[in-house]
Image (tube, rainbow, N blue to C red):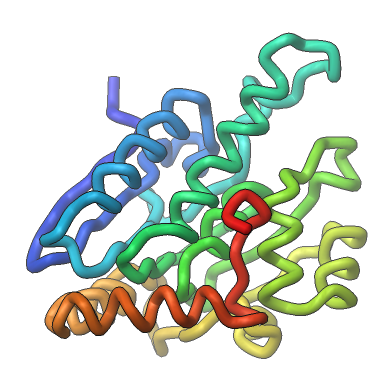
Length: 227
């Protein structure tokens, strides 16, 4: 059985890959637990200078796996599952290192939340973004809604959440949740890695200081758990 999360380290860069390509890298409890543990290790490292979060198989993350998460409200494990979705978002926003999401396919629901939690998103022209929870009668984690509002503002966030519409990378660039669309490529990972290695080559204290300052700005934002 394949590991749900792959991690590699090279030149001061940690590459974290969601590895369930047959399910478009949908989030399960084992995957989320592995992601939380890995982000905790990265945050304590003095040798990692930048982080790239990506997905296997040409996608990014289709959100929570509904085989585990589409449960009745009175299910005793439901609250824990929702909390577990929030944990990696909180950890990404508190990492001392800058993080870059490489999105080359669907980033839906909590998957888009993970990309939003990163400091930057590089998205290929094939990337699509959507928060379908309201239309499907599912709970949108508070941390995702809060982070989206910080990035695009309250009116735009409300439109995105209530409509459940799909957006492309060009719309993301115009609205601010995408930082860069690499030209003429289907996979944004190489672009994200190039930037991550450039950042990791800088003096660590300068990168960590400015990363903290950017997140502390009014629109840089922090998740409610960090305030």
